[in-house]
Length: 222
Image (cartoon, rainbow, N blue to C red):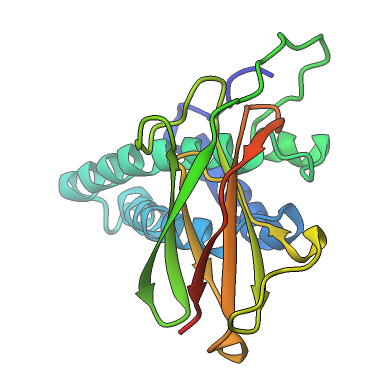
C-alpha cells in the first residue's frame, strides 16, 4: 500500500479533510476506532477549519488569518497522518471504497513479509478520571514504551468481572482499538462502578499479526 495521498493545495486539502474527517467520525464505531482517537483529533481539526474559513473569506482575510491557517494545517497534518496509519490504513474493517475516501489505495501486489512480534508486553494502568484509565504498554525486556522489533503498536484485551473474580473464558476479553504509540485510554460505564477490569496486551505488526499476550493486570473501576 502506498503513502497516504493528501492534497497539497489549500482548497483541495480543505475539501479532502472535511470529507475524510466526517467519514471517520461517522464510521468510528463500525471501524472499531475508539472514541478517544476522535477526541484527540477534534481540536486540531476544528482549529484548521475555523482558521481556513476566516482566511478564505475576502471580507475577513488578513495576513494574520492566513498565517494562523497555515500554522493550523502544520499541526493537523501529522496528527491526521498518525490517525490514518494507526487506525485506518491496516484496519480490516475499512473497505477498499472507504480507504479511497481517506486517500489510501489498497495495494494489489504481494506484500513484503513482515515478522511477527515476539516481545512480551506489560500493561501499566493509571486512573486519569472517573471510570477512565490510561494504559501504557511496555516491552517487558526493556521497560520502554517504544515498540519492539516487528511491532507497529499494540492491542488491549479487556474483561470486566465482579470484584475478586477472574474471567473464566477467553471470550470474556474484548479486543480494544489499536494504539500505534502503545498508549491507550480505557473508559468504562457508570454501571460498571465497583467492578474489576482485567487487562492484557499483545503487540501487533503492521498487517495485524499479533505476538504473545502479556500478563493480565487488574484494577477496580471507580
